[in-house]
Length: 357
Image (cartoon, rainbow, N blue to C red; front, side):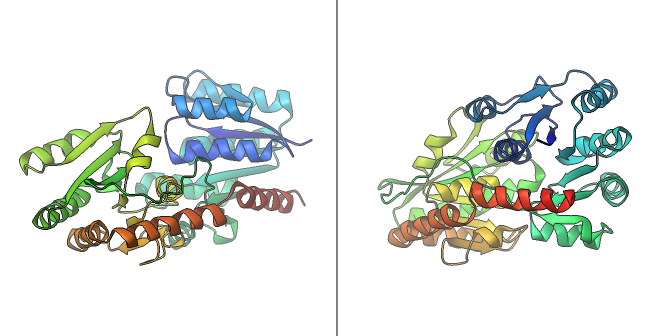
C-alpha cells in the first residue's frame, strides 16, 4: 500500500483545513495516509472531533519552519513516503523542496485562492511551474485566473470541495423574525460592510411592511472591530456579531436566508453548509459560486459591492415566504445530489492513478 502525507498549516476553522481532513478520510482505505499539522496551538475543537470520528492518523510537528522542515525530511525517509499532498503556501513550499530533496515522486500542491500578494504569487508560481508535480485548485475560476498569471495550466487540476456534515430539510419558517446569516472570517475578502449596507436597506423596507429582520454574522478575524465601529457610527440595529460560536448548527437551523458578499472566493464551504440546511443563498458572483447557486432557483447571484441590489433581494425573500422555502429546498437537493464525498473521492483517486502511471 502506497504511503501519503497530507500537509496542513493548522487545524483552524477554515475551508482548506476541513478539506484536508475530508481528503485524508476518503483516501485512507486505498492508501496509508497520515495528516501532518504544523501548528499545535491552533486546533479547532470541531475539527479535532471530526478527525477522531473519522479515525484519521495525525501527526503534529512542533517548532519553527526550519526545524519542521528537518522533521519532515526525517519522516519522509523513515516512512518511505510515495506521495505528498499540501494545502496553501507554506506547506506547498515544504512539499516542493523537502519532497524533491527526499525523492518523493508525486508532490501535489494546493492553491485555494487565485488572489494573493505579488510576492506570494511569484513564490507559488515558481513552486508550481518548477518543483511540484501538479497543483489542485478547488474552483474553475481559480484555474482560469492562475493561468492568466503565468501558472502552467496543464499542471492545474480542478477538484471542487466536498460537503461533509449534517443535512436538514427545512419546510417551516420563522413567523415573527426573519434571520439573515453570514458565516466566515472577519477579513477584507468577505466585504462585510457591503453586507451591512444591504441589510440596512432591507431593514428599512421591511419595517415599512411590518416585517422584522435580524442579521447574524458569525466568524473570527482582524476586521471585527472595524465592523463593530461601522455599526456603531451608522446606528444600524438588529445586527449581532458572534465570534467563534461553539455550536454553528443552531444558527444554521434557525436561519432563513444565507448572505455572502465576498470580493473573491474559491469554492465556498460556508455556502455549501448553508445549502445543506435548506437555506436560499444570496451571494456575489465570484469564484465558483455559480456552480452552487442557480440564479432565481436556489437563490440569487449578485454583483460585487452592489448593496442596493442585494438589499432588494433580501426584501424579496423576506416577503415571499413560499418562494423562500422552495429555494431552500432546491439548495438542499443541489448539495445532496452533486457535491458528495463519493464524487470527491473518485476525482482524487483518478488523479493519483494517472500520476502514478
